[in-house]
Length: 254
Ligand code: PGA
Image 1 (cartoon, rainbow, N blue to C red):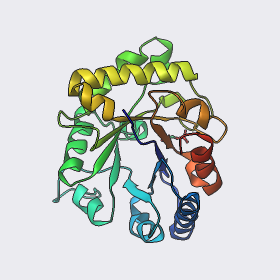
Image 2: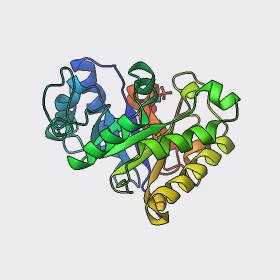
Image 3: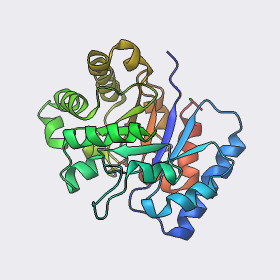
């Protein structure tokens, strides 16, 4: 089953207008230069940069995504952004359930599932994040935690066209530490099994599962060549055009 490799950048809370536009233009130019590629590209800037980045990406095959969303379409939710607003700003994707949101904003699996379902309603694809903490890894609970997160935060109507899963061990995010390739493949294969149980084998085989956590140009190939790894969710290294593009080029998939 051919799953198109997704190279996704999560800019997190980084970028003012000028540098965000520069970064987007740089990525757009490099992706254009690559010409025909087997990979799909995605950048997820902060809300304030969405419309400017959309403009900067014009003509390049780079999708736009946001980093979070509310589950309501509109209304009295001060400070929140709705799926329709994201769609209106030109987004095709939205990240939900990133471990930083699970930790900083106490987001539950149930809430994340509601957000993903609301994203589908608006015609957005959800990148649903899962992953264990260091304590959970050391206690041998990685697969259990990921299973629980998949069962709780992936809506029942998720499928390969509306959902991407991102496995990001919390302890690997922004730390320069990574699991071994064997560990990553083990978790991805287990996640696909859980997805098959929940959504059927066909959906599970079509659904992309990204690896995230200290992905760099130097380790891109190691992770992206694994059979159940269908791309990367890249934080720090997505803030530099050269690194983001080098990850794609070095992956051997693009
Ligand atoms: P990192 O972040 O690449 O900086 O480790 C990944 C993420 O949190 O999505």
